[in-house]
Image (cartoon, rainbow, N blue to C red; front, side, top):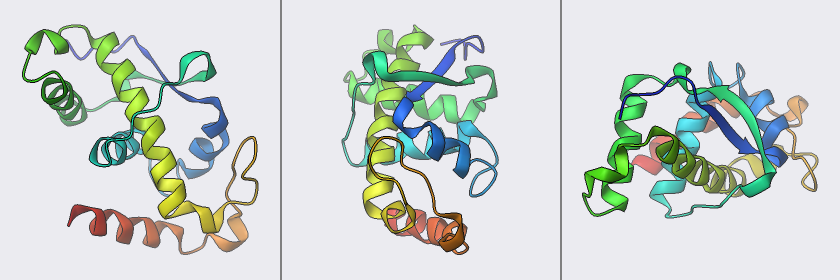
Length: 146
């Protein structure tokens, strides 16, 4: 529980293009989109292993302390308040990668599906139809808070 900044945070390689397209279009940095996906995955109880399909996306040093606090809280809750679960930041990140993977699936199904042009191997956003996407994402987040 040191907020280790030397961990490479991974996402599923099939979401590589989506992460890159959504960065700077709807969020400012990769860790912000990752955080959103973690929250969606956790809220919907969807955790998907990445296994060997992971690609390094960003360094954990970009994760803000308030995001780390949420990750530690998720781990503590998941392991029934056994605080040993939050000692190893690599294990915390691994668990959050799985929630983020599930959360991206939720985001695609509930919002991005209408904006995606290639749904097979690597989904990507059709930017010609995505003008309202930042506003739609904010609306979706507020609806999820209810």
